[in-house]
Amino acid sequence: MRMEPMPATRCAMLSCDICGATVTSEPDMKAHLLVVHMENEVICPFYCGQPVYDCPMCGLTCTNYNILQEHVDLHLEESSFGQGTNSVQCSRDLELAHQLQQEEDRNRRSKESRQEIEEFQRLQRQYGLDNSGGYKQQQLRNMEIEVSRGRMHPCEFHKRKADMMESLALGVDDGKTKTSGIIEALYKYYQNAATDVRHVWLSAAVDHFHSSFGDKGWGCGYRNFQMLLSSLLQNGSYDDCMKGMSVPCIPKIQSMIEDAWKEGFDPQGASQLNNRLQGTRAWIGACEVYTLLTSLRVKCRIIDFHKPTGPLGTHPRLFEWILNYYCSEREGSPKVVCTAKPPIYLQHQGHSRTVVGIEERKNRTLCLLIFDPGCPSREMQKLLKQDVEVSHLKQLRKFVGNLKHKQYQIVSVEGVLSPEEKVMKLPRHRDVATLSRVTHLHSNGYVCSSDSTPTQPWTYCSCLFITKAYSFMSVKFLFVLFCLFVCLVFFFCKVFVSEVWPLNVCFHPFGFGSGVFIIFIL
Image (cartoon, rainbow, N blue to C red; front, side):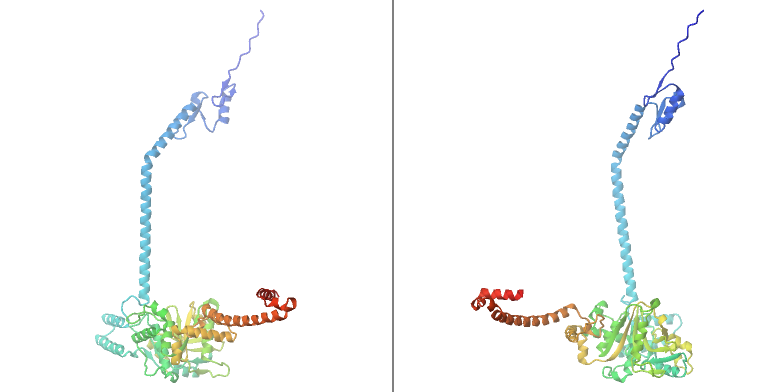
């Protein structure tokens, strides 16, 4: 029996529902789905190779892509509806945030304002401008504290109070903080000891004054002025302007400075201190000392060492200036020189002292001798002993490395002013002095220095005065040039132009103008 061949069996074809691709077996379809469509779909074995889709918003699984799309659209509609319902709440949140920001700004500004007020009040207290009383009130208050602490007997309190009231009534210092004779004691010491010193120059006799209960913490400027004035009162060269004076007490010094302001001295400084010192604890500095000395007809000068001139913030130029002030020649002079020069007022930020001499050591270094009003009398009186120790001079000696403040000012006395010179120091007379000084300087071929000091009003040269001086000279010079030019024009018109044109043309108005034009061209 002849067998017929069996027809070949046709394989079933599988089609991809996503992209339409066809494969011959289910494993091939799974591989296709994994390779091509793995990012967006997951093959679930329970669906026999059918793809499933996960919702990106809630994770719901779908087997149909169109159903998933409708499902996602529902999510988007719900989101837009939620935004619409929450718009009012969002606006309220923004308004609340704005209110909170405004409240925070107000609190910050209020805090800054309080800090500024507190800082201003602190500065007022520091500089004695808080209306808490002056020398008298502080003296009584501190003595009462001493009595309450048992460090002063009540009888001593009443005695000191009576002495203070008498001193204030007379306007004279009671001398309880004064130490005299120190310069003479230093002269003897340097004559017999101090082998490491090559030369020393001392100022004229000067008394030391230190702070008391009434001016502790703010009276250094007044005490240094008392030291300077005590030297001038012992110097016969200043008898004319110091006639009948004694060392004044601090309230009297305040009154004298106010009187100088009323005369017209230092109007800027007066306005800064509200034109009032009496009854306050206001500090004074180099400008007030200069103003007071000038009002007393004492010729003086302020020198400002506004920046360090040596390494590590030191001021060697300051030491050199003081050395040149006290001595004219170093070589050939004796070891100890008592000069007739008054002491120097030395000011820096927060404190002032008095320079009474300078040492030149054997290694050529310089050392200032300084009276400090913060040093009490019991320490200064140690210098009056017969056997002065080197340690006692430590409070006086200041080397270059000891003065490291950023800026220093000194007030040096240079003689006596005549009444006319005193008047010229007033600000309302400085303009005339300035103009005359500028004319004198320019006539000698010099240029006015920009380094101005209150003792030389002419150094406040402004462009206004220089311009006025030059303008006046320029007008005269231009007038002379114009006259010479007119003469030259007539001369050339008669001599030169007449050779080119007839004389009647030359002196015709048009011809004359042409001749002038030719002269300008030539």
